[in-house]
Image (cartoon, rainbow, N blue to C red):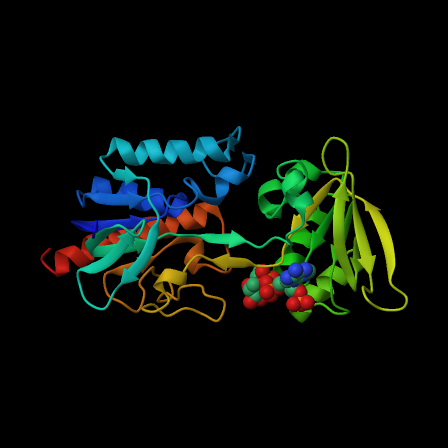
Length: 317
Ligand code: NDP
């Protein structure tokens, strides 16, 4: 028996990070009756960090969970319809656009704002779970401050890893950059900055085996030149372990319709959240490989809601 149900919506928002909630606040205040589905991780990536100290308006800092609860409350206050549910399929072949929720409900939306975010990649070591929030992080800008005058390691050899290592080097006493190859993939200028920073040590041809520590991370076990005759295990003493091996944008179910880059980030018209389909917008990390901050996500969520308002007006909806 087919249990698929249908609903018409003017403004559908998918995702509940800073972009999604900000879009909901603006859309609700503009009487666009937004319906927001929270997705796999209600509150988004920020709910996995501890203290957020760089979101403007919180001079004493705020926990990621509190910040997201505040944004949600603000959206609810203006009448946003916030629901649990995961978008599982999309059909943007014609307007109104169809988005399937939990495989069992089809929303026909005049406009869609995609705010599904990105997921930081992890190495897949059990210790990453064991020490989650206790020394393991995938965001130096978020958590670096807690490692002032401490020792940290960053994994990765791309621009993000170099940027995070440089940022951490301004706070920590010692930064190890753990690179699996014998060279950095990062741009030359970033490489030069890394090599010119005295408290960054680049460990080429090193892979991480595990972490150790009684009360949080106290060190990492590495293997140098894995599989080679001179393979060697080494230990480094660290207080923080940062992953910077890339992010995966959560765009899979939209790729059939929307232009994405080679990694999967939804491509928007520069300076706007407009995608290649009129009435479909993308905001926050799913469309942003560069800045990836809560405040920049919130800003693009705001832009998307304003674009939705204009689109509905122009199309007499
Ligand atoms: P990248 O994909 O460029 O780099 C990922 C790095 O992580 C690579 O060095 C890769 O190693 C390494 N890596 C991947 N998986 C593993 C693993 N399992 N174990 C160990 N190492 C691993 O991602 P970035 O996030 O660095 O950059 C994404 C994009 O954003 C790039 O285009 C980048 O240029 C851009 N960017 C630009 C910035 C700037 O201009 N300021 C700042 C930040 C990002 P390997 O090389 O061996 O594959």
